[in-house]
Length: 291
Image (tube, rainbow, N blue to C red; front, side, top):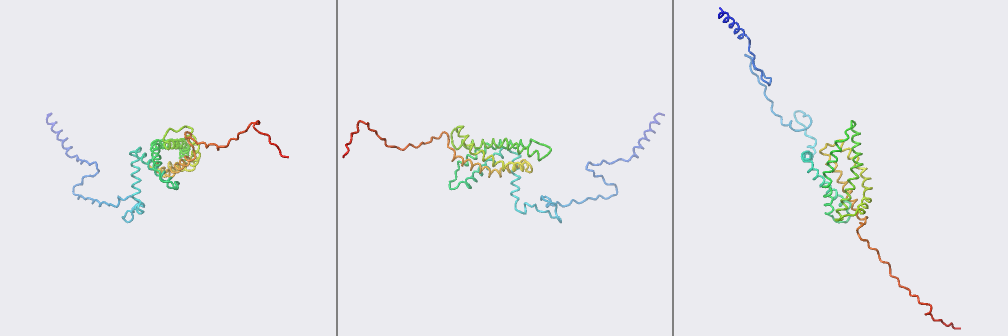
């Protein structure tokens, strides 16, 4: 009896399972299997439009617009700028060193060509500028990088104004003092006395700092306002070509007016005068007057 009931129950269960429709799995891409009796339709893939690879604004009538820099032949310049930015991001120290060397060399060439007069080109003077530029390249880069990350106030105007003020008060005087001190040392080729260095700074610092206040606050503000971080050294370097030429000219002019303290100064001898010998009174003979 129990066997008959078990067989009847199992048959009813299998009938129910047989009548339940089985669901087909859905692929992850969202494509469903076609139903029976319905034809499979495929959408043809459109041909690849190679003109869409050209950067620029939206196309007109299926033709992409040519970028403005390509129309004016500026594509090599744009590629050079992009290559410089990539090098600045990957190898900042080497890129900054090479940039500073080129800037200081061009600055001295500018000074000698414009203000040299009839004097011949002095390659040693350019070499001194290149050495000074290599010394200041990495410290200047670290200073401006740290300055750009500091003073992040809510107001962009206040933040940039603070950076410009801090740079002009602290960095500029130290840079000018170090620049003219190294120039004086390299030109002399020996140990320079403190008195001579002070005399050189008195001749150069007031004029250099006064003119820097007329130029560099505006350049620094524009640099921090709109120039990307990887191009700030290049933007400042373009302006620094003329500025370094002015510093080189100012240093050369001060060299002709300052007398080193260790240089001997010749004192002209006094003119020789003929000595007058006075005879004693006893040596005089009376002269008889004729009546």
